[in-house]
Length: 173
Image (cartoon, rainbow, N blue to C red):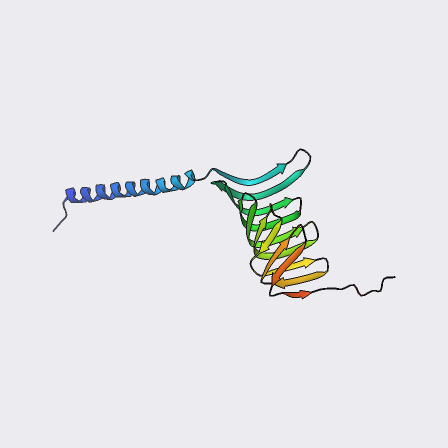
């Protein structure tokens, strides 16, 4: 019951053809995923300037632009009201920046916040933190489940708050 050489050759040829076809199909899928990207970049600084001043600056280690949405890794952001925003990942869609993973927020008015997720709306100057956070303002410390901070009016609305507030008790004459 020995196999004939013809059957062995037919088996080997069909195996080679099927492997070659599989490689071609999987290679086309990779090319299709890359074709959806408008722009891909590494270690890049984006600056938006006016005729007189720097409006904002973004540094990122890796990013992809697709359909006018910027998806970046390891972001550092700065603008006229924000001293520094940092996060592991961010999605920038026009005037809205969604930050995720080890989010640190430092505003120019002294407000600091730390969380795992934050949404910054540049157009209306609003910072929304939908997850647990720790925030500092001068000597005050606030912990809570969610926070909405208006950068123009400097009003913060938070839920399930645990705060330490230092009052000035000295008599002023």
